[in-house]
Image (cartoon, rainbow, N blue to C red; front, top):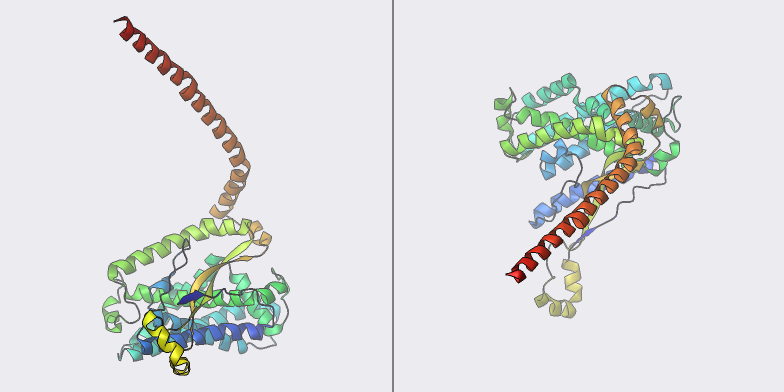
Length: 377
């Protein structure tokens, strides 16, 4: 049986415990992957959140995807703990940039080294530097963070984790990081992993100039067909533009962040045994043996979505260009839509009056005339 365990994103505790919670989810998921391969079952079938923008991470196979998340978590924690306590709040954004760069480079190297060694290929020496070079040139990870509007959120989260206080120009209340620290950290980790995955997919796609070199990487990391891969990449590019220019502005007005989190699934009796009618009588006779033979439940985390409530007035005031004009359109629509609804209701009432009263009466008169003419004949 498969049961969804409700994720408690409201976590009231110190940030050390926040990292431990996320670490526990990842370790449980890695253990579930190993046990599932031993049991030979296919119970772990993660589905993307419905109605949410797709991620490049969804193209990565189940096991490699989880190991990429684990690598990003490890390197992010490692680089955060290296931060010197002598850094001032004025220099923090520069240090934050260095932390992100070191984290995704280290995660990319560790992840590819493991996955390509699993596939027994010698291509990791050529692929890893190529992937890191493209990550730095295209600035994929930073670009993704900036477009999501979460740069200040992630920077202040790490600052609070390291120093236990907020910076000079803090945008968010410290209670936000205590209450929703798990959700913010999970979204941060998923964002890093998605940036690495997007560049990897670009390398192995048909329009890549390095596609011939990437053919030796095999299908274990990404088992999508070329057509399915191109479709996903196009959807990701389209939805990212729509989110940056429209949905992100809407979320600012609604005072929320759209986060990706890890939601835990609890799978009881993963071996599938002892569930049929034929074995119920045997369970009553030998309860001890059955209990000893039954497998403990699997705990596996899938990517889900979460709406984080937070005031974003400062970001709204800083809007410019197309996003500013779209924000004006939202304000006008909020003002004009009630009026438009009233006008439409009036127009529909008038149309209904003409259809029912005038046309209906005319049809009735015609029918009466036809009946009378037939009677005269």
